[in-house]
Image (tube, rainbow, N blue to C red):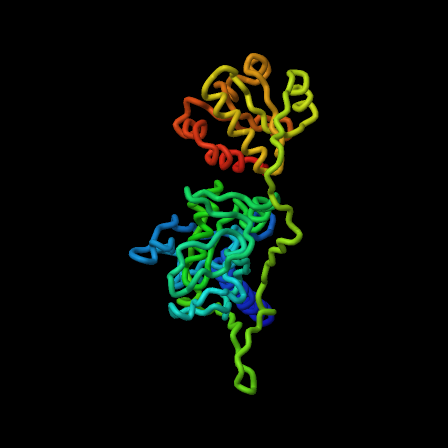
Length: 361
């Protein structure tokens, strides 16, 4: 073999070796980043499987803090495209959290988390006596004595649906773990999947590598808070529409009107009334009250003798019932013989919560 050919062969061998090494390095980097290359050369994300939410032991478990994904491990679960990350503290909380070793100010956050204050979302309860009453201003939802939540504004549910999408994994954090536990209870109560919500715990106990300090010291030694570093979501109650008690609005619906609703792809809440039945009378009363308490939300009423002729039995098999139509399709109906639906026939709050799973009143 000529010397020039040998040199070319060696050169190609070196180039091939370097290319192979680079390919391994790139593949390793992409694996580390959770990426893989498809057949067409595009990359796609490979998301590590998450452990199911599991309560911690002791007092942390009572707060709702997760055993596996918490302040000590959250760094391993950041930057997922299938997740949202929320810190639920106020910029400055009126509660005296210094009394329990915390900080009333939002002194720092974990990189990747955005901030929306839980005290603006729902009633704060169960605070230690040394902390005081905390925030007592307007909220999107009020916590009721039976543990349920009542929307205070027409936009309340839509706001949290936008901030906490049901099709995403939700990571919640606050100062000590209390607000994040309260937020998870609210979401689960309103129909969110508890297996997709993780109470990560409190920033006060976080020692990871993604800390963003908000509390800073100026040259003159004074302390200040660089809140401009925070991706903060404000809830402006002045621009929301309060839910007020008004006149109940229950409109009779004929077969022709029902068929037109479907053909026009309309949406609506239809109470199928069985007449003379004690359960139907109770349900009718609930619907009047729910309508009045929700700013005259409209319900339609249709007698069962007509409904059974036009509503498919497999979708609405029992009467009385409440039927939810969305875009001209039946998406849900109450079933009297169902173990899950049965109690709803006897409890107005359960009925209202069932409606809220599918629609905004």
